[in-house]
Length: 282
Image: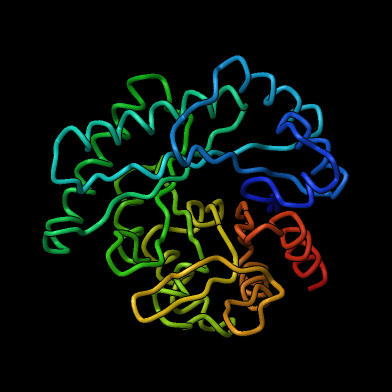
C-alpha cells in the first residue's frame, strides 16, 4: 500500500501549539497521512523506552514510523574507524526503529573525497555488504536498509550506484530522493517519461518489480547549482522542480506502492497531503 507523510516536524505542528513528537501520530492521523520519518541526523539520541512509547502511540493511530540514520555515515571514509562507526550508526538506528515498530532505515552511504570514484564506491559496496550481514547476525533480518540517491557531485548515490548497492542483498531497497536526482542532473526530471527513463525503468530492469514496488521515496523541490543540490524548498516554489504529478502518473501506471516522505523546507505535512491529493485524483 502506498503511504504518504512528512520527514521531520512541520512548522505548522509547532505553530498549532504541539511540542512533543509523541503528539505527532494523532496530528498526522487527523490529516489522513500514514507515515512519519524520524531523523537521527546528528546521532541516535533516543532511548529505547521513549522510542517504544512513540511506537505504541503510532500504532494506536495507524501511523508507521521510518528512520533516517545519522548523517555521519561514510562507508568510503579514509579511516577504518569511521567505516566501523558507520556500521554502528546503522545498528543503533535499527535498534530504535524496531522500538518504533517499523522496519526501514534510510542512510547516506558515503562521499568520494580525495580518492577516485571507483575506489570510493567499491569501499561503499564492501562496507554496506558487510554491514547487512552483521545486522542480520544481530537479529535485524526483518529490517530493510535503504541507501539514498544523493544530490551533490561529491556524494556516492547516483541512481546507478544505488542500484548496485541494492543488488547486494534482498534486505537492501532503494531510497530514491527525486529532488536529489533532479538537482544532480540539472533539472532532468520534467515529464512522466523522464521519471521512467532516468529512474524507474533502470531500477525495474536491474532490481525487479517486487523490490522497486516497495521502494522508499523522498520528495521535495530543491534549488541546485553547477555542483548539484543547494537547499530544499517548498511546493510554493515555481523556479525549481521537480513536480510530483508526472511521477504520480508513472507510479500508478507501473502499479508501484512506495512510502513517500516529503522533505520540503518546513511544509512537509502540507506537501505530503498535496502529493496524496494529486495521486488520488489520477
